[in-house]
Image (tube, rainbow, N blue to C red; front, top):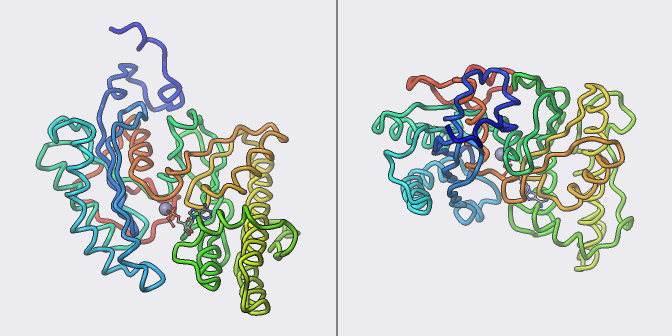
Length: 365
Ligand code: KG4
Ligand code: ZN
């Protein structure tokens, strides 16, 4: 045996169920699919988390005229693209389909049509090449997307997932079972960015552009409400902030470029502050020492800077994925599948996709 393999890698050491100690799973090649919304994402990732190749086909242009994702259009675009993207990813990884060891796909939650396309394609690939299949919960994917990239975070930890559809805090236990300990009572943070961006005339999804514009803006020119600030809970609420933002935009109409930038700066600062404040509360309540952050809004530069400062000041270990692995991608699905591979939790070919499945029921996949 290669002597290097005698050193138990962090990823193996942190998974209690991984008793085999044969390390062969580190060399396995996982083909992963993520199609829960508007991105056709495929990746090949090795069992130690190393990316061998990845590609994302963004459907943005298909949905742009409608100002949001149209599920039927999304399903059709996934059908058209999934085999093209898969072939390209295998070509870039320089491997043949039969060299894939495990197939993984998002089975829940998400838009039913798009989920069906990815899961059925994954089943077809697994069946035709006689490979095992792993079903992944999309939120578990966001939580574990930093695996092998931002260093490996051994559970227990607190996870903050901030995306277009979710804003929630999870308590992840030793066995990677997650429990929601706080969530938004209304809009998700990404939704607030997108809706206010739309009112500013920015294309959907607006989060990235608001982030960029905010760098030209002055802090403190726009003060947004900090919802539930004095409330003793780990929940979030962004609808009041959104309503306040909409009325400010109306008040300043026609809005000039500098005012837009100032507005974006105020928005980024307030959302980042609320998210950091709640994440810190969650760390204090659980007593965990690590914070893992994922989801599209985790790409926000103001949030990243504030999280880093907060964690440094409070001696918390922070795990942030690379910016490109914050938004939906297939690498995160592969990395979540690695944990299930080590736990030997494969799924049946009869498994159906589910549009809504709380993370507490992720074990059903
Ligand atoms: O995780 P994701 O790709 O999809 C969902 O599962 O929802 O997140 C998309 C969300 C969108 O709302 C988008 O505006 C937001 O992430 N987003 C950002 C940034 N990049 C993407 N929000 C703030 N700042 C960014 N840099
Ligand atoms: Zn997502």
